[in-house]
Length: 295
Image 1 (tube, rainbow, N blue to C red):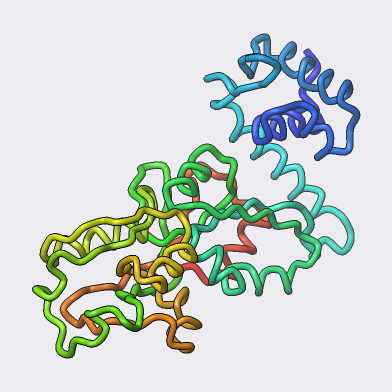
Image 2: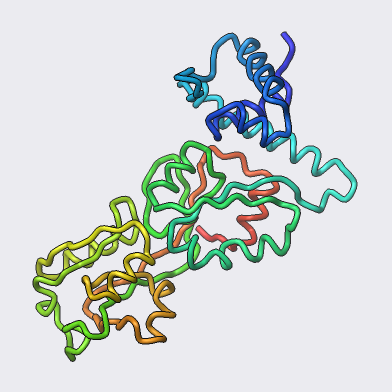
């Protein structure tokens, strides 16, 4: 039986990540019939389908999910082979799929990607920004090569490495009652109105830990964007725990007041997530080294 080709594997991977043959063909600069034929030939060689066909869409079946990381590894090893073998192989080329939770993706993207982009200008980086739960899921299903998240993620297939220290701050509108009270104590937060992130967010998890140390209050809003929460706080709709890096400008202009809460532990770690079975080729190794990751 003829072995599978890099083109067939590339079509399989792109269809798996993008959900359709047309998108895979565009990504790989192929005609749609050529991409369809490559996928059909791969499935013929394997003697089993890799996708369930549902109303014109392709969804990975159990066999496809099992083989996807192996196909990605073969393609990455092929790219490493060409990189090491060609003259001038010190220049990295290729694509890297990076996930970032909202705080990192919106406020620390320069720290996360800047050094690598400057050092490896011929690498195409695809950044996905979502909450921590979504980024962890992307690393687990191999749609992301690496993820940077705000909170602890516990999963036996994920290697979590510390990246940066981070902290939250309890914020209120300048005319909020608590903003004018000196010597705040936990009891002062009784009945407070809180604006929270959505479930699945690491900021939400940290806020819930903080709330457990305070008297009961009321949740008046749940929002999935930090900027939306900032605007809600500025409008006087409630108070919120927000990343320090996200409110620097609002604090400087006086639109938000940071409440002094030394009785609360608002520290947390930003971490990188890598699948333990992920093949770490030259691109991923370079990114990890640039980030200065430690265990």
